[in-house]
Length: 159
Image 1 (cartoon, rainbow, N blue to C red):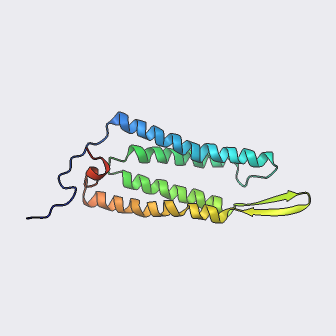
Image 2 (image 1 turned 180 degrees about the horizontal axis):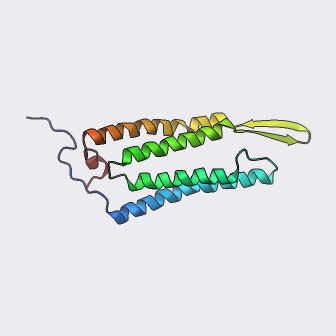
Image 3 (image 1 turned 60 degrees about the vertical axis):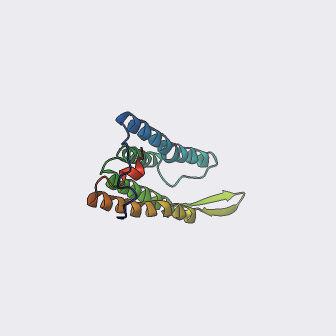
């Protein structure tokens, strides 16, 4: 008896274009909340307490928009060979974004003559772990798609 690979004969169905558009829209919606709405609201909330935000709001929103576009591209390209490189680009951009935030993530607050410094850099650095691991996984996906095109489809898109 010859051993077979688990995905050798499993059927799969690639998602239709309308389904990919819907999936990309939902991914973009979630990314817009995380990368645009949350930083914007955080900047406004800090400003209401007189705490200066370390970045210009326009540059923060521009970087967030780039991350949203990359999240949409990642989702839309999933059933193609472009998924690995697009995902690597999205994760690298997210790492740069988080690294820049971590560099200036100490807020100085003066309250009734008492100076308090709040440092959240370690928290932001911990947030960088997931995209770093995902970047490595995306490199493997890119290599696997180049070596064996279509092999991941039965796993990613089972019928």
